[in-house]
Image (cartoon, rainbow, N blue to C red; front, side):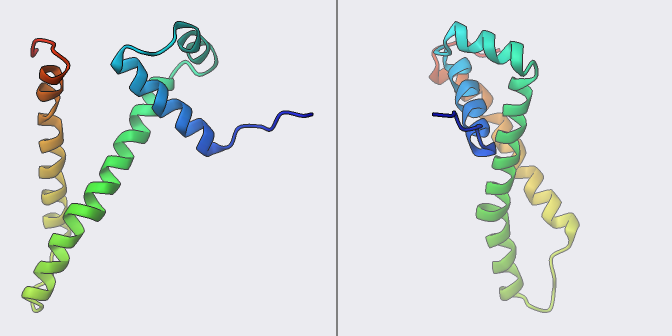
Length: 111
């Protein structure tokens, strides 16, 4: 029986799960060694995938509905790309601020 090649979704799932396990301290040392040998930049790949997903989520679920509401509330005034960028940037900075809370939840001392 031949072994199927992993799909792009399989690779994404592997990278993200390994990235999470690494941060949680549960990544198997053998799996980490294989990843570092086969995909030396795997952590960066995973972080990029996660960041792009968060950006998409925030845009679709948080920014776009606010902008749509504003457009219907005052239909004569359209939302500029600058306002979209400002709102998206503000949400992203909110997420960055949560890094200190993660250290608290994990029991580590803040930086």
